[in-house]
Image 1 (cartoon, rainbow, N blue to C red):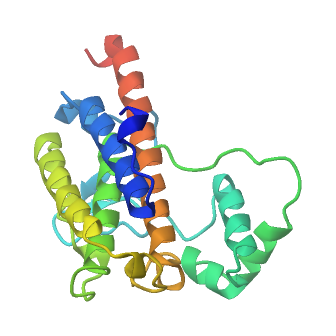
Image 2: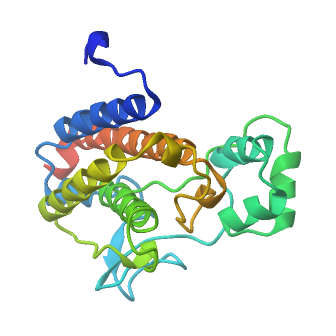
Length: 239
């Protein structure tokens, strides 16, 4: 995208950023097959599993297939995000609610001032990353532009097939983008325009929520890109 085409209004910048990231993601995901989609590069990966066969304690989904989710905690890789939330004015109690952990756990994280700890985030499959984005965007739409009734974790029937998963995801993003494009400046400044239940959305101006949503999309798609590169590099193993 040339700089002469970049919009400078708030909504325009956020939409242009999203559109650019979405186009790059479409190109990056071209040719994704089922085996690669479900590939587990190390033992203990989080993925999509049949109900009753999940190994994580809080796996969720409305149908036969559920998405792995571990016990509530704040990974070391997210300590900086917790510090950012506190610096931005979120109370310890609200941060604890956001992460589904105790107030004491948040206070422990905020007291951490030593060297960065090893990243203890789980390794995931491409299927997990894509499904995570799918339920997040479905929930964001439902709790901003929809009826604000259904738990985001019950909005998406997960699938083991890459093609249908991508087709449904891109369709959802089109609906999301159309709804966002119709927002007014007043709505961008509205605190609590989104009632999304997992996070700080109800306490933030909607422009800040959109910024965070773009960031979520970008960083998970970057992780999917890395997994695709690893799959290609390890072709001798699975080919």
